[in-house]
Image (cartoon, rainbow, N blue to C red; front, side):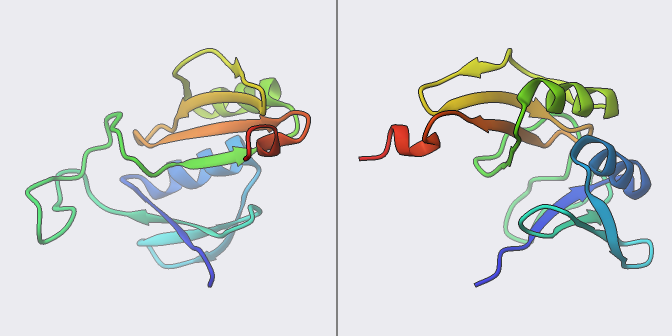
Length: 134
C-alpha cells in the first residue's frame, strides 16, 4: 500500500514556496492551477487548491477555513536537528505553538503552517520510539 498526503490550501504558489523553504521539498509535477506534487519526503505531498468557505464534504455542514484549525490527523517531519528545522519553518511563515519539549524518546516541536494545518518536528534521541515501546 502506498500513502499519499494531500493538503488543502487557498494559495498554491504561497503553499509551494512554504513547503520548499520550510521542509526542503521540491515541486515534482504540476496539475495546472489545481495542485502541485511536492517531493523529497518519504511520501509525496500534494498541495490542492480549495477555496476558503467551500464545503469540505457532502455529508457535513463544515466549510473550509484556513485559520488555525485542529484535526486528529497531522504530519510529523523527522529531522536530525530540531532547532534549525524550527527556525527554517518559522522563517518561511510557520508558527511555533509551544516550546520544543524533550521526552524520553526524543524532542518535539508543535507547529502550524500558514494555512492553519498543524504539524510537528520530531528529533529522535537514543532508540527513538523504542524507548517507550512495550
